[in-house]
Amino acid sequence: MSARRVVLVSLAVQIPETAALAVAAGLTGSSALVAQTFAAGADIAVQAFLVIGVRTSSREGDQTHPLGYGRERYFWSLYAALGIFVSGFVVAGEEVLRNGLHPTPVGSFTVGYLVLGANLLLDGAVFAYALRESRRQARARRRALSEHLRRTTEPATVTELVGNGVALAGGTLATVALALTQATGSTQPDTIASGLIGLALMAAAVALTQKNRLLLTGRGVHPRLLEGMHDVIAGEPGVLDVPDLFAVVVGPGMLIVDGDVTLDDGLSVPDVEAVIERAAAELRSRWPQIRYVYLMPVAERRPRGAHRARAEPVRAG
Image 1 (cartoon, rainbow, N blue to C red):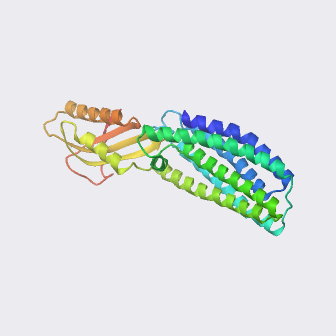
Image 2: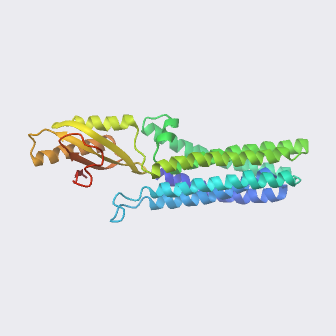
Image 3: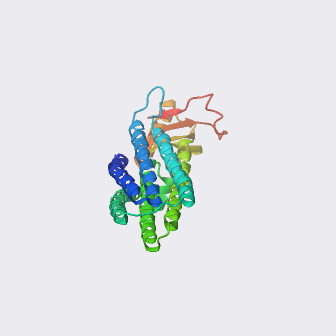
């Protein structure tokens, strides 16, 4: 729910911001304001993609998607990142080239300052809200904020945080460029600011695309987390060894745990089932994000994947 709130708040702010920037860009002729308008307009599309992703990924699993629709959020967040990249490329390329070859006089500075000032306040408020949510999530997982942003499986909040951070930086650049243009009478600061805004958007998009690519392609978990899961299973009475174990992200805050366990030969079939159930329950108790647990009783270590087509694991939950 926190991701949905962040996205909706940002969308509500972005629509009037874009309209105001478009008016100010037309009145001032500022290339930096045009760049900000492009970025803000693209951000509306980004919010739309994130809203779709948040809604579709919350559906429960069915016959066609037995592990749920969690990765839908990564798919739509990837589109959002591509939207940021396209807007940055357009700004860094078309606007800089056009203004470099055919400089446009800049005027109506007061309008530009008023609109940029208002947008900086609104973007700052949304950025602070997204930052607060990210810090709250980091504290809940006992992580530093930087570590949380690297490891989180929730892309919507990170996309909003990065996007609004770039919007703040872009608004600051546009304001400085407008002031320098007014002071010097040269349009070069305006053109340079447009290029920097475009490059910032492209850099942010590359980082977000990489993150969503990893999540879409089945990213695993941090080795320390996997080691903790291994120790929990190995600590169950009747478990002799855990020769193979892995966990894969299947959605925001959703993991599937799969692996092999070597059990005491003296255990009966009901005892084996009980051991698997206890291990799964303890895993979920410690890490609520674990949605599915599949553990296979084996006699000895086997190559990963070699047994999957020949035997069915004992599923817990």
